[in-house]
Length: 449
Image 1 (cartoon, rainbow, N blue to C red):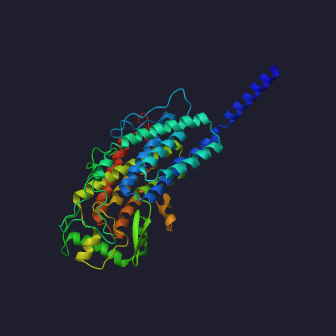
Image 2 (spheres, rainbow, N blue to C red):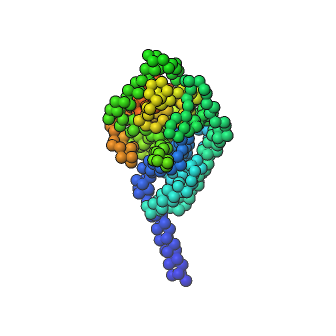
Image 3 (cartoon, rainbow, N blue to C red):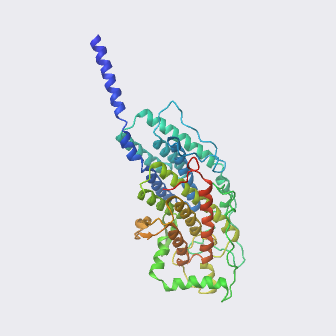
């Protein structure tokens, strides 16, 4: 009997020891350190499939990355929650002191929880999550720690979703379409699809950091004038001239920064669409490049994504507020009416008013945030568009890239130059506001890498 008891206790000890050994801390840390980049990449692929408009995509990126950041904060004493800093964002649930967690798992679960709710097909996120969990188990993680971490991540994700549900997004779905004006300076739907205006009520969405949608408003555009020789006519003719010259470098720049999420093509009687990354997704890809280049840890990556995605989201709210205040005519409409009726832009005109340039606003907002984190002269290579068969572009700084993104809209024939210049100023103001108000580090430490 004693021999039996001894053997039983020995077997139990060996079993518990084996279970303990399954927790491979070093392997888990190495695996987890780059996971947030992978989850953001997967979210971008889902956004492309779901064909979300650029403003809506920015909202999803922001909430998902805020959730990931908040679920990770308890593991990093030098960092602090954004509750009380983001508008109406209440105190985040805290982990239970008596339980053991692996917070990188909680972070990815929080990200996943938000994605499944805010995207159209939850299974796309679930498939990625299941593959992630299988990899965790292969590396070795104790079941209790895994379950605790997943439960905590779910709780944080649900907290963020409850906050997101109060941002007026759902209410804005029921508002009326944009009413077209007959005045000659006003925006009109453009070829080839003549789509209605996208997100005319986006300024009703609760900002993340800005006091209101109109806080960072731009200076007004050039007054409309159809007379040859007028300033407005000259701005239009400059675009017309670029398109006629078809300089290879300018055409390439226009296509590199196109980032139109749903371009239509017509062959004969058949129309089909090609989906691409949104402008916000492009800048998060640039953020990923910097994160990888600097070999940031998971918390630093979460910090980068949360600041950039918040700046992008507020940038779209600010930009769209101005777009539907001015409802400026697009170059395509103006040039065809007053300069050349057979003219077409190099890239497809998106379906919303011209001023200010969305690319200029959000690119400058993102560049301001990234410059704050990585420095003024941070050189990098942007390989975002390799998937489209376009070569990489090298930049000496984030601002150089954002300035080119703005110019690309004029080269492509879809924006007048003031929309780019004044939009960039607007975006810098948004980015500066975000970096000044959001404090990720305790004791007023400045977030820099």
